[in-house]
Image (tube, rainbow, N blue to C red; front, top):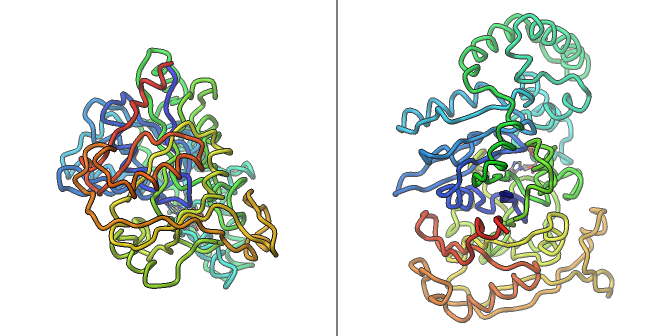
Length: 432
Ligand code: IMP
């Protein structure tokens, strides 16, 4: 049975955690395939708020296996803290599986992430400083250390020593920092190795077997399409592939096994970190949305930048992901506005631009062309079905579906699990 991929259609923070958690209630397995603890998923269950950064949200369901795939970069200290936190909340973490091929975030990755950001000054990326970029750099430079390596103490010691020699040169000669001690890092990580060992496995085998056995498998995305290192607003991107293609590489599952790609967006847009944002609002409307939507980063606490939905971006996300469906979140947050807007194209010196440009210099000069929609005053937080929604909301959703060229499968009208309106059974779709 083919599987479902959940991806972010904007700049991350679209509410993928809530959507994944909703879909996970019927899943046998939830898999993460890229990013690391730069992600932050907030899941509200029965009034209790769970914040996870690395453990897939399926862990909150007793019958669901959770997989951290090979494409994820793993900070073992953070993973173990999260496991401890979940256990202290009464969550069973014994069905968590960690890929032996996932790369490790090392202390020098965290350090170099911050130093590189500071060096960039005004041209900083606005990273989460969790060491994500430097860990992927080492992976691609073929210097990375993987979970399987951590399980082999002698080999691991040599790899740490080799890396520390290189990193200490960089730290001392380029950044004027104190050198790091290979033996301290080795000892620290050996402590993690013993605790992580029971979770480690060949996850590509496990995920493929699950799909082949007819289990319902959900791939839970992190970040968003416009943060993809190839397709996003480069260089203001993350260092992995949050789009649907990244799911196959990051899990070791072939593309033919993924038949459903759900693009998650908010009824407005937010961005945390620097980089272009054509529909950004710098006024009271944006401030109001930030407050009502509680738009502060789960990982860093930073206030998120707020803007209208950008249809150019949504069309682009639909194309690069092959979206089959969309989920629209936080619709309730827009209640009370006179007018709601969607950018449907950009204007560049009198020319109408429909495609998302590659160059940020061009993007900076483009002015969004908006379509206006009447707002709504009614609270929709208790709506149970699409037909409960006021006509103005329905009109707005329909336009989003048209732009994405994909049907809405889920609508979200509040933070609670129950405030989700299912429209289409994606597992049925995945089954055809
Ligand atoms: P990095 O992933 O920490 O290297 O950060 C690169 C960019 O991606 C920055 O603009 C971050 O704010 C952004 N970013 C990384 N992870 C997330 C996320 O989960 N949600 C939203 N933005 C993110």
